[in-house]
Image 1 (cartoon, helix red, strand yellow):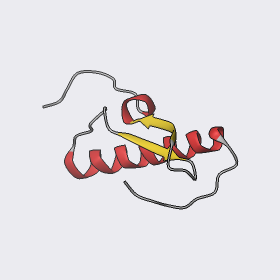
Image 2 (cartoon, rainbow, N blue to C red):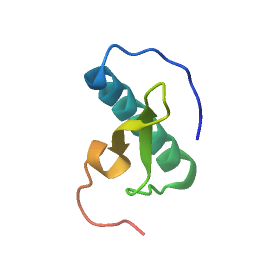
Image 3 (cartoon, rainbow, N blue to C red):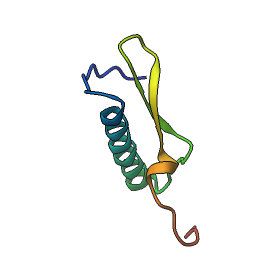
Image 4 (cartoon, rainbow, N blue to C red):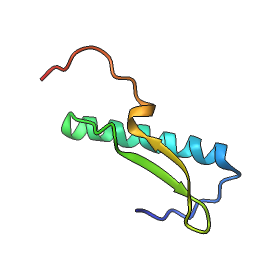
Length: 69
């Protein structure tokens, strides 16, 4: 788990940030390994450490067509 220490205005902003990170990390995984783990996720916690938002990689990318490999 990484602690970023960002102050976000609410759950909507937290979800948007988590989804952007999930997209970026998915893209990096595809570029580096030609694979993506759709079950991986980004969680955003509040100041008490409680996870308030989760963005799954599989929810932020579209998978189309047949596997190439």
